[in-house]
Length: 302
Image (cartoon, rainbow, N blue to C red; front, side, top):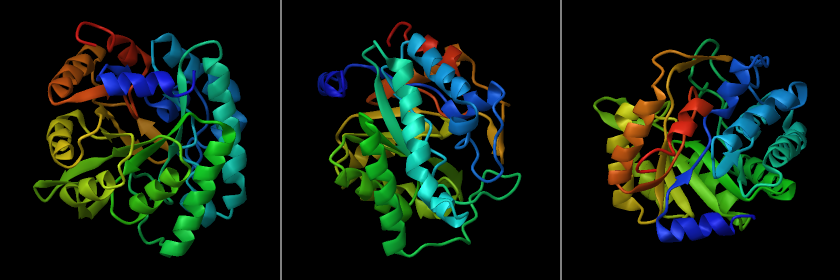
């Protein structure tokens, strides 16, 4: 099918269902998480689990599933001396997703992040590790071009949160010519919404900077459901195209996700109806959200 059906649905304002938290679902099914690379190496060590996660989201009715290359961040992998592994692992991740959707009309997205080395036992990136703009852009281009070569239908920019690395990464993705969906992650700090883990970056600055790239769609993702309403409302001020939401629940205690404060599937569906009223047309889940949640998004109003 490729992306044509999704493009037509976006143009008509029809609802599109995404998958849930792939990395955390891989962990929940027993794959080992790495202290250095989180779920990235699960593509190599637990391919059957990765494929089965994707298959379950397809069975739940997802229109798009996202392969598992989020954690093969070129920043992270270059820091640990494994930059040469990024495209190899990503090709495997995409192949597993393509096998899971074989014979269906489901699209496969490739994920790009700006993930850096994590602080042990925390959900915070270690911001002490910096790259020059030239070096970062080169790494992001390598990643984006690798995803295109692997055959993804679109690129999901995930956990975008700033006007430096996120902008450079998104521009690299746009250069591929593939459809690009930009997902922004926020949290509340000092009384306002700021980039997740980047309290020096206001959503009011990040959203217009990324919207100016004119991606195919934008979302608020990996964000608490409690903050998503306000964030979506602000995003709409700067972006007139299709918007969506896929929140998280629980928290990261590197290298594992902690499944607490889990939102019930029916409650997620209710929140999606609220976000639909704010103009959102595509919905799913991020870390902590599983297939049982995605299956509920096909109820009334979805």
